[in-house]
Image 1 (cartoon, rainbow, N blue to C red):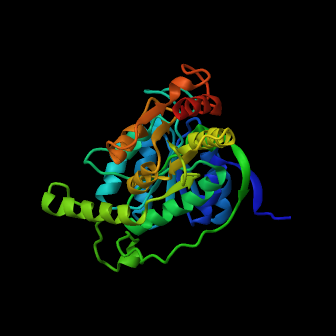
Image 2 (cartoon, rainbow, N blue to C red):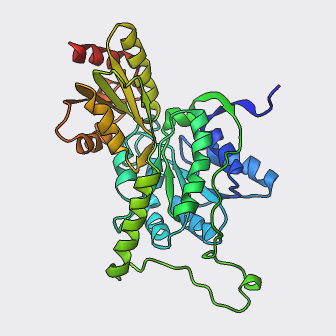
Image 3 (cartoon, one colour):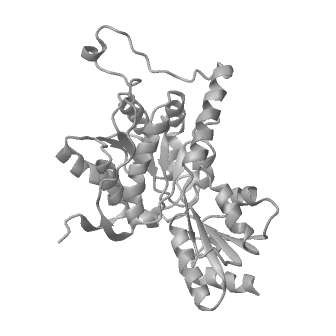
Length: 357
């Protein structure tokens, strides 16, 4: 019997992966559909010598996270869409101080307080900025329980490597679904010591330590640092998945849990003799534009599928330019588009049939 192979939800898998990555501090505030994440850490962190804190708000969570990671430890917070809105000033401060933090946003549907329905409506919000100042966090989008476990370990490594906040972006389906999980510790290249981290008075030996910052008012030093970091991330950290794209005449581009729904439609279309392939961005920032462009160049048509009104669609149009014609299928094709409905493979398959004619 393999004790490391268990049935787990995506939310629990995030917790198992974070502890495997050496995370020993969690601070967060309850909100659906991510409540299982703080519940997991409350139960499991004390067992490994870690600390769990339930904060009084999401504003407290992001600022407490800032204080924790400034000491060099691996720490995490989690929330859902409205709570992520409240974290933006803290995210901007994390960028200004070049601090490695991991923030989980298990998306829910709609603007404002929205609803507890699953959705992918935070794509623009998460990928286009991190608070004020024009900064961008590195963004990873898992689409399975195993990826929640494995990619959260990658998130901690990338945060430390680049001294940058990493946003982990599942949706409610990925977070709430249960699948078999293989618990494991993923090995990454060794990182340099955190000489920048704040230490207690005994370690300082009388020296005054102040957390460094971009000092945004000094534009001559601010933007070159940003550009260098972004260029390195774009060169080294692009991640994506391709399925059946070699001979595809129609390329489906989708992300997160919706990519799994789209893959089901792609496989059914293949059984009908329709040449279809799937391209899934895993890193939303950096966006895999070159690989996507190469996959789309082999196809005659492109179909973007996501559980929203069309957000990644804009990045696909930017990446592909005036290449293959681009169609979109989104939230209006849910079984209950105005309520708690889901996007099933059927409407995607129907659209693939239409595009193949």
